[in-house]
Amino acid sequence: MNHQIFKIAALAGDGIGPEVMREAIKVLRAVESKFRIRFTITEAAVGWAGIDAAGHALPADTLALCRQSDAILFGSVGLPQRDPGISKEARPERAALMRLRQEFQLFANLRPVKLWPELGHVCPVISQRRSAGIDILVVRELIGGLYFGTPKGIDPIEGGQRRAVDTMVYTTGEIERIAQVAFQAAEKRAGYPGSRQPPKVTSIDKMNVLENGILWREVVTEVAQQYPRVTLEHMLVDNAAMQLMLRPSQFDVVLCENLFGDILSDEAAALAGSLGMVPSASLGATKGGCVFGLYEPAGGTAPDIAGTNSANPIAQILSAAMMLDFSFKLSAPRDAILTAIAQAIAAGNRTGDIHDASDTACKKVSTSQMGDAIAAAI
Image (cartoon, rainbow, N blue to C red; front, side):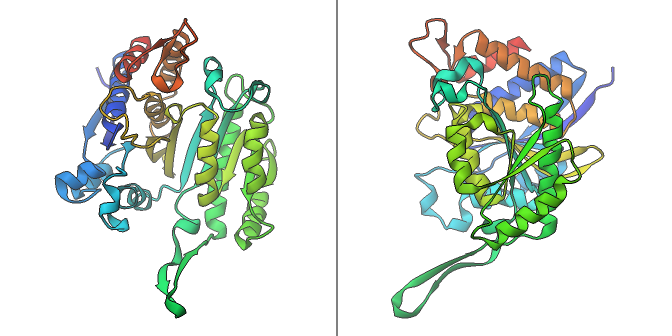
């Protein structure tokens, strides 16, 4: 019997990373058993695990494995109690995660934020504001803008003071390609059952102050002409931050440059009630209908609960589902994972971050028990 084989580099990292990664792999093995596909999953050290093993947050062997793989399933890196002890260039987020983004030109970050109906109690906005449903996709440009522009640095100036310089730079080409991702995503979402019509992209900028914002708005407007089915609206970033809390159901796809996307995607993630429910995909160029990507949960290493088997693995499992969708074009296995998560939640399984003690129909479960429930549903 012939099977499709997909190579996955599994980089669990630090803190709760190994615990939630274990459950994602468990679910992928369940998918293997149900469908005629095979995953070659190779685990490697990254973050402080990489520093301890090989002296670098992204060891050479780990990077080589990523190059040989079809996709990267990433956990989380960084330990607050250890990070300040090394140079900022050597810290895991910069030396590992940002290095991988640049190495593979992962320019598009997609973070879907969905409030599951059963989890309304953990959403911070009042019921009237979430009653219309929250289902948002934040599309963030990932390798340009303020984080990567030059010149950059901290220099001494007169009077014994120091000056910090960060430079925000975007070209029309960089804006065009991330805008294409956003509009294509809006069209794709419109085809899902229960989706809103018509599809909409809300483009975020600060054109009343920044030259970058003026160019961003002009280019996105031009790209929108290629997608007549998609409604485009522009919104200033400060207003967008407010509107996400006041009326989150108005948003469909939110398109942002790097800094604004970093901030707004975390704010939007709070609407799901827990970062443990929010996955993400960082994507590069498409080749042959598929795309190389790095898939990771939105949350961090959570060292305060690491090793307690209490973290929510759903974001990591949802990230694996995004990998099946974007990098492997496996829609049926992806749907099987989404259905299994819905069934596990409907059955009352709740990790601590989404547990409501007053709801007697629900039960508090561990990381591994949540993974077991989802795998069993598949």
